[in-house]
Image 1 (tube, protein in one colour):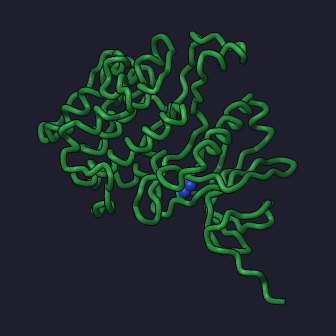
Image 2 (cartoon, protein in one colour):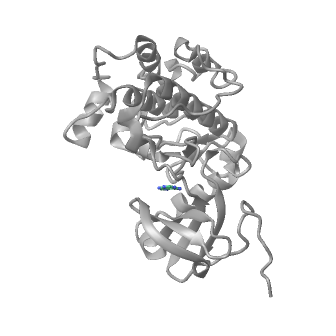
Length: 301
Ligand code: ADE
């Protein structure tokens, strides 16, 4: 009997681990391992995130896993800028998330080789992704070059929503019995963490704008702005806004970074936009960008 052909990009039907051939490890986190895997029915490649149930239970991280799934489902209507969650399944020991495989790896791998034109393009795509997150009331909280993947056509796909927060409006918060002033403990990565997380613990959409400033800085000069020998010393530098620009740092990019790396989250560029993030789009650094059509990514050298 001839098998019924399955259209190439149709999402898989209900699957189990037996429907995939698992290949190399392409990502590792504290609670998960990501494998490159091939669907045996369609030959299509996916990235499968595998989480050990016992580990999640022991470390009390179930809420993070549930949140990640909820966020990915909220974003599923957009086929671009975010990894897509095709399906989830589980067996006795593990949970599985079947995700888009980003063929060109993460931005960190390429970050030392970006022309200014590339920086502008990738910054623009990241801003568009943050605009969409804002529309969907999602704060990423762990934006960093490792979580910015590049698809087969070199376009951005944001990933890793395990630290994300879904902002509930006040009525929802009351219904959930949540105190709207509840503090958020440190989640994320030391080098990109925002000052407000280190002081009052209040995260907002502006927290992702701080991380955006760090990523743009790193795309221009190859290293993160706040570096030191320990987490404690990195935190100290962040709170003191202690960083500097190399002499050859592009002046417009520098002005943009300076307006994003601002201690007071309300004063960060974009944080008060009625329509996020028009003030960032209008910054001089992006004067060559056509926001209605970013076009093809420039070549990474
Ligand atoms: N590393 C982690 N997640 C990945 C993905 N979805 N594609 C490629 N590499 C990854």
